[in-house]
Amino acid sequence: PPPGEGASHKEQVQAYGYANLITEMLHNFVDGITLGLAWMAGAPSGLSAALAVAVHELPQELGDFMVLRSAGFPVGRLLLWNFLVSLTCVAGVALVHAMGQTPVAVQVQK
Image (cartoon, rainbow, N blue to C red; front, side, top):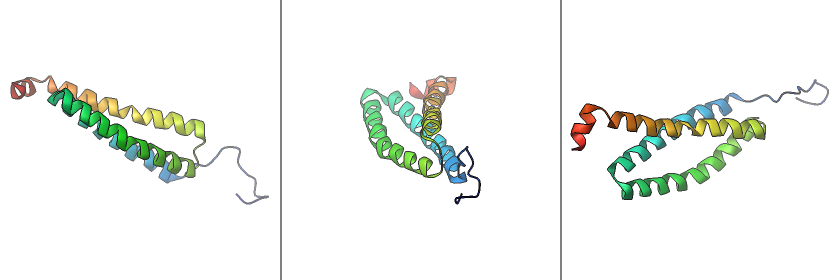
């Protein structure tokens, strides 16, 4: 707020910051599905996919940091939320693993 209008002690986070976190959840979940499927296909595929995901995540995370900071997230909260959102990648891998254990999936893999 402009000087003299009673600045709040708590920073206001813009809606696009929360939207970025939601889309990042989906993005990381799909990365997890990609990794899970690649590893099911074999170690060479899994390693290739892991390298590709890691390389594309570096600029992605830098961009997310800038967007979230611009949206008004304090750095500490930004890093916490970004870490929590990144865990959806693990959920994607877990989904692939669980689906790969179903009787139909086991039969298809033979």
